[in-house]
Each structure stands twice: as C-alpha cells, then as structure tokens.
Length: 107
Image (tube, rainbow, N blue to C red):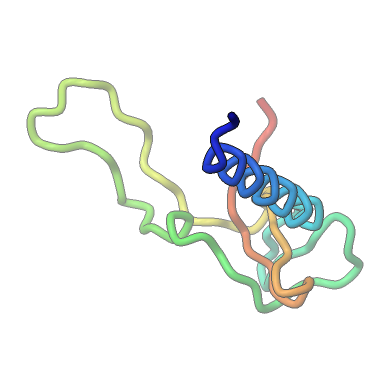
C-alpha cells in the first residue's frame, strides 16, 4: 500500500515547483549603464532617475575584507557605482521600480 504522506508531499512539492517556474518566467533582468544623473537601460529609451541599488553596492570605497590574523589573500575593496558602469537590473512591481543587483564587466 502506498504511503499517503509521501503522495501528499510529492503533490505539494510539484505544485510549489510549478508555481516557482511560473513566477520566475516573468522576471527578466536587463543590462543598463549608470549615468551621471540616473540609470539608462539598454532596452528603454528614457533615463530612470529614481532607482534602487542592492545594499552591498553602496558600501564605501574604503570597505575591505582584511582582518587581524587573516593569512589568506583578500579581494580588492568594493567600489561604489560610478557613471559608465554597466549593471544588471531587475524590474519589480510590474516594472514600476528597478533594482540594480550587480555591476557587470567583460571577462
């Protein structure tokens, strides 16, 4: 006789998986460029003056990862976003808000 709890768990897992797929199909990140006065998306004609930035991208330029007794090599300090930086942007709230989630560069 099959385990009814296993069947229920499998049903719930599949429903969650299909819902997650449906939600993520609507999320499309875009490339853009930081300008002196805002954000310019590659696929949108107008500059966006009011946008959001992931918190770790707003750390001061002097932020580093060195600590007392650290014997491993540490990455260079983070750099604040500057005009000309290419960024990855996720539109949220039906495209009403835009969140810069990463700085990007050619490899």
